Length: 390
Length: 181
Image (cartoon, rainbow over all chains, first blue to last red; front, top):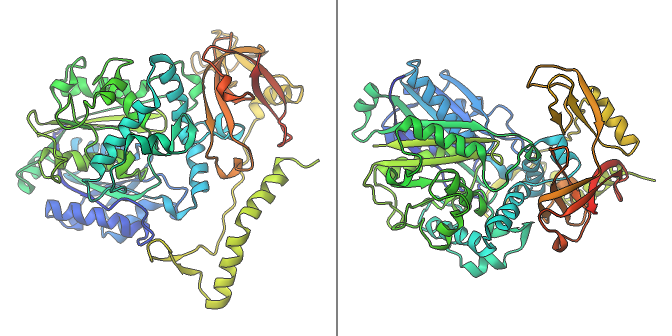
């Protein structure tokens, strides 16, 4: 396998975007990535689109995006791994370059969730567990699946709703410093605690929003990357794993087994000691679709011991200056969570972090030169852990 | 007596009635289904085509499960070769690649592992009051996800719950749920 570098990144403005169609939204990120790498559409040998859809009108988004962005007749496909579709797009693009099939491949994530009204979107995501055994008769929602974990976690370890809200406060704070983020205002712990329940014990402010957005990254082989840029960011490892679709087929609701496996696989490949990953990493983006998800991520990634993730939140150890800064983009919580774009946006953000070019106040000190992206699809149905390095 | 089928259709139609009327009027007046989004001022074309989905799922290989429901019983499967137990019932055992399964009735009491209250509901459940969904550990070793008919503030992990199979009040079709034992 050949070494693969990220040589160009782009992210659209995330949020409520009725001002653009799906391919126009994709173009915002594609253009930024092409400009960043100083390449043209014709240089892209293949492209992979992460998109979940259902709530949006285009059933074949890869073809529509490729046509609009001038990428056809290069080969393009759409991939799906639920909320980790973006990471699966990056992984497929990585394989194309690593295998020697292509030298320059683009991974694009795009989602237009606001093409449907909110109750329809809630319905679509709620169906994304195991349809017949969880939705048809019991009407679970996405906050509901994570709430089942929050209840179990809080009962077992004594974490409180305020501990969960600490995550929301941190991520809104960093989101307020990220001009691309959906939410631009910091919030207080009190505001979070007072927000209404969406799936008890999770509240509105524990939840990531419904978002339109896109992201793109250009991957290149070592030889080509060195011609394109002086600051290639290498994809050191991608670990991936799946869990069961039906939550009742699992025994533990205080963490996500798929995320633990994906982390182990990525750490092994990257040469990271799994008992002390923070020694190697400057910054992480983790999948905080709900506040409880970020706390479980701390533990599944080994940033905290089992049952102690909420203490990292309580002690504010995941701000800049703490044990490890997490979600300096604002995370899914404040930056927004355009399902298929999220995983690509994580890689774009961390590339910028490692190049030390993000906005003031949210740039992590880069000393070790390594960063981690943790992207979960569904409720641990899919998990991808990607390690980037300078 | 009507069931969820007719009831949900009427509920959804009613929820969208005003919007559809306005859209129809807009097209009648201007000839175009185009409006300015009040929040952003962006021009939006509202689909003139509507897609309604109702899937048809095969339960042919788990016919015994369906038969059980009609008798107010819940069935799981056990692989006759390796003894693996399946709920939801599976017609095939991937562990030993056998499809020779025995059907057994699920016992009636389990222990609550975790739960949530669905406050913000999907469109097709929006006619319901807030409902509790729990995951319950059964003595057979598997878990069952279902509604818990109880005041959520009384629920505790490990609490004993009784399995009920019957017509769900209000929706009037046969499913299963739990109640405090």
